[in-house]
Image 1 (spheres, rainbow, N blue to C red):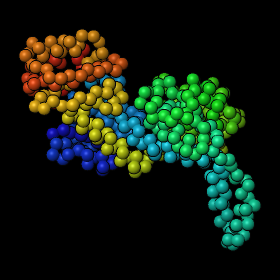
Image 2: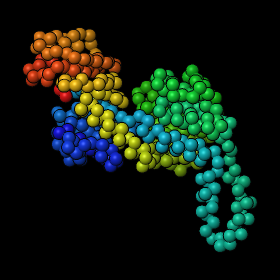
Image 3: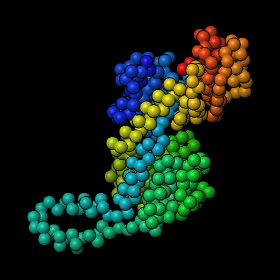
Image 4: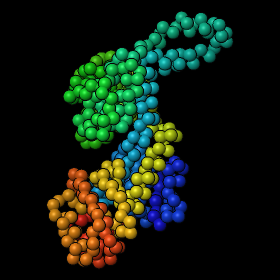
Length: 390
């Protein structure tokens, strides 16, 4: 029986993925094999010795101490792309709100509470509507920073609306490149993208390398009529530099999903309460994906969409037993483990080894279930972090 501890409100559709006969799921689970959560911060929370995996029902994992968990051999999953459509649609809303006089127009209409004559109101609004005239996004250029699951969907949406699209992503994967429409023109750096764009939409993860990537120097390259949209993470933008640009008339609008006190009630800021992924469909998609990934890892040792370990997936051999182990990515570890198996007369049927940065992960199918002394011998090999038998 696998035990899954949950934090936050997880979609029922995700929880229903776990078969009741082989999984115990709940918020009060002790000694869990895995944790499923959304925004709960795990920094400072005691780590049970039983814990082997954590799945974040969402893309960001800044609420999980990934580096600490890596040292313990705990695989951390996220769900990239599961909330992409929800964010994409909000980006479109943000562009339209910053382009048309929708918000000030609605605010004005709601001041007319003393009027009782519909014809009189109609006449007044016909006279006043010019105050709220805006532009159209068709024909404008959207610059997308980060061309992954969300960025590529935003690109498709913008092209469908008749916009031109330029993109910048120094870490563009092969899979992401294949998803990208050929009409998207890739920029060689952020400065070039800022200079070309009427709208700049950010879709990069919150990493040390992306902290304040949109700063005073980058903003200095933008058109004074440009709109900056941040539906990624607050740390990507230097908010003080953005406010300074807005106040100086060097940036037209800042649309964000991460309000900060200094930005509240600013005439050129459209701030939303972190609702980018807050749709029923998105929460269901994220929960289902996270649950599926946890089950595949717990039952088969396969890793898909981990933020700290390499992607590893191997089909099961009938009537075999599976050993998985993580280790520091140094030479000789796998060879030592295979020597242990040879010395213990354990027949290897199939195996796979993958590495990512400082970590490596291995799946080895063997003819029969290894004894405790075999497992202990593997665990004793230098640089081995964690061993599991499935």
